[in-house]
Image 1: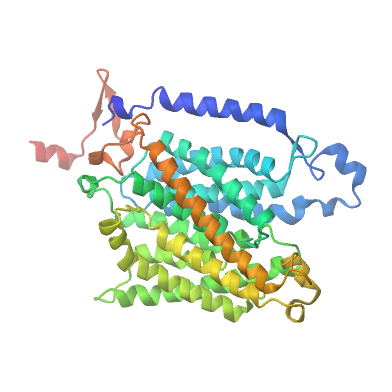
Image 2 (image 1 turned 135 degrees about the vertical axis):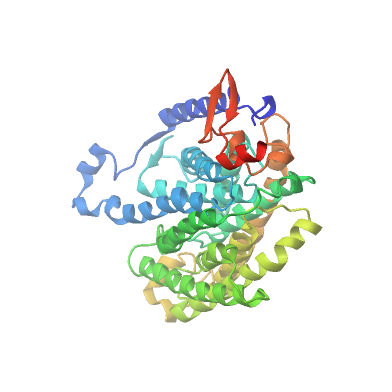
Length: 456
């Protein structure tokens, strides 16, 4: 099925090798171990080996890493003939993005005598940035080449780092679980890219743009991994102690409530009362997205459950009613429905974070208010913090939409080997498929007995 326009024989090797050589050079010039990783620095200043960041942060990093490579990868395997690409391109994009994110985040968040100091916390933050890229990947899934994905990652990681820097450093926003910085940004960036890359004849591939029984089971593997590890995702970079504990607990109950809402509304919106696997695979995770900003705050288990219930509700309704409107009216072909899982729940999370911040006070947090809201003091009130949270949401949407618009036009150039309209959502364009063999220098497909009988 591969022709010259989609042939990756020279394009992909050149892009991958050149990018990695550039990254190696940049790491050689800019990156060095931090005080918890460098042998000399650690042994000159240590008091107890168990106080090393590794023992506090690495378990959370492992969980986040599993979410990035297994959770996101398998969640997108629902397409019946695109499983290799869903997992394989997810692997490729993530491996590049975490390296590039280390550079961009390190440069923006401060050099130490011209060097980026890296440790386990940098690994977590790089994975967070990678997660945002993979969310955008879901919006264009099946319609783009691996080179387009790498080019998109170059720009998106850069814009993510800039947006994150503005929100955290200049606006003082609190967003430990990334409702704004990760989910809202990634979703609306991807939606704008897929709008620019709109394919009016995508219906020619509609027979592939669907699932089969076993592909949905594989996608559920991704869902379960994400669902299980989301408390670690939201709490990974929070302050140690009660804050991290509270974030994990709030996420735990939000996800549980979200799942019940998902099952309930999925049956409700189907006139036969049957469950839709698309809803279960995706909407059941929306509670983790929506509690990302307020998770570290005194949201209470009760409040977390309300947030999760609302997130599951709007996500299911989005898949059922809003996605068809976005495609027919706004020409947004959102393959994975990232608007319903990440976009709307991310905005909900940002709003909940602002409301919860507005209610913050020393009478509620005690001395712990410094860990969650270090900027709130006699000069900076809780109301001002809430305004900064809302402003951060507006900045994020602006960066995502404008950035996605520009990058979409860059990806529209006919040089990346994108699949034609008739062969979208098809693995065999870019992958050697089982059952294919070389014969006389030409690619032939080994037919099943049933196919042979039909031909005869």
